[in-house]
Image 1 (cartoon, rainbow, N blue to C red):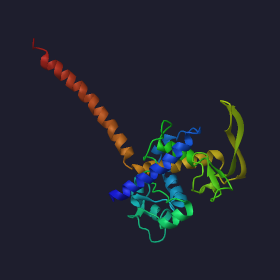
Image 2: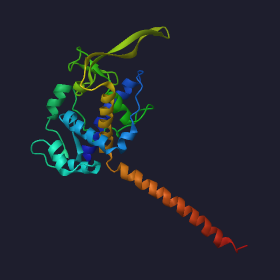
Image 3: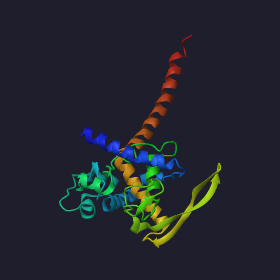
Length: 255
């Protein structure tokens, strides 16, 4: 189990490391809307997107389906909407994809996404959640690539755009500018070549829901930990006042 966890973290670091290198070329990472993390409806929608679009290749093998009860889903809802075939509620979220075949098809084994947003912070630019949020919103058509897709946040990535039906097809618009005596291509925006089933705002919201679920999956007890921390700080504040007054009473008659 420890070896599997370390392998998952290493693969996640490789993905994020490549993205960091790519982002250092000038693409600023967008800020993930953190308010999604406290919205059970967003987390439930993110779980649905993950199962339908990501779980074909990417596992979340350190998360069991029954943990989804913590975001408001019942066992009956999990069975009806998120399980396939012979999967059971108590099982982990694994995939049937053969690792060797995946490496042959995509050039690398798709990493386990259990800790993808936690494995590394964005070097000086934001969090792992910021990277995944940016990455999933920057795919574009590129017929020169084996998958037919490319990504501004991670150029030449081996992963195809699995959410393309939702987002549609786009091409990036670049203009040539001179910097320090050299001509460089500067990204200025997108041109939609084929609309998706969602408008841009709805797609960004759906991606935020998916990233929120991945962030939650990496630490399901985060919400409880934050709530407990607030109570601990309140207790310490009250105890500090009590200790201060007790100390004053103890030393009052001592000269």
